[in-house]
Length: 337
Image (cartoon, rainbow, N blue to C red; front, side, top):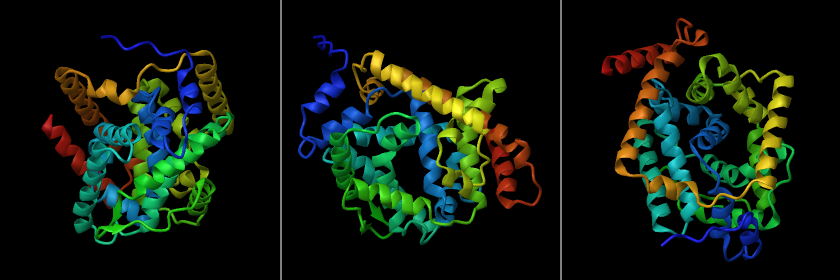
């Protein structure tokens, strides 16, 4: 039995018919789960994750001593994070699949908390991550010169993420506290966190550099990787770039990128049809052979990216223990090949 084809702009029509206080999961699904693909997920990851490691403890727990997955399994980490987020946004906090996925993250944090005691105990890290996720698309749209999300989507996003916050724990299984009381409270919480003066940490710099480089490495040919790096850095928060000592792109190039992407998104939304299906179900329905092939492609990418990133001129400095460990890790990866 074939699924009836939806109307040209069916998503907005459906959102307008729903009650955000009751149907917040469906509204959030409609606003966040359609129109995605591997490229979009990679770009979102590059725009989102560096914001979460601006603190010393956050950067240390992710980069560790040898780069962790951000360096040695960069593509696999992007896909794992994207799949987790897609699961949460599509199924919603009331669904057992979301709850199981979040609990997997909680247990992973428990494991690493034993290696880095105290680093997973900071309540504000969790609140900021969830608050940032709720308002991300709204702020990105404004940055691209478009209108922000509608009031219905704001209400639904706030309630949705409030329920998600109940599923997470900080170190020691401590429930999260100080969740902002409103949508505007989410924005203020994020802005206060982002505008707090922060020293730069080498591990944070390496994480952000690796993420931006990986996006360029994965999606652009060698001669165009300068553009691949400029796209996420043009759209990133200035405070995040400053915290990680990432040089912002040329202002003219940045203006061109922002304008071009804003126009592209406007044209797609205004003139193009809404996606007929969400990305996650399409991914889940792939045959086992295709899933295995994707995994092999990710592994090949990662085995090529690690030595590429380690050999970047800025990573050849002598005397930095993190860079020395990165080179040792590269040797192990090459030996595996």
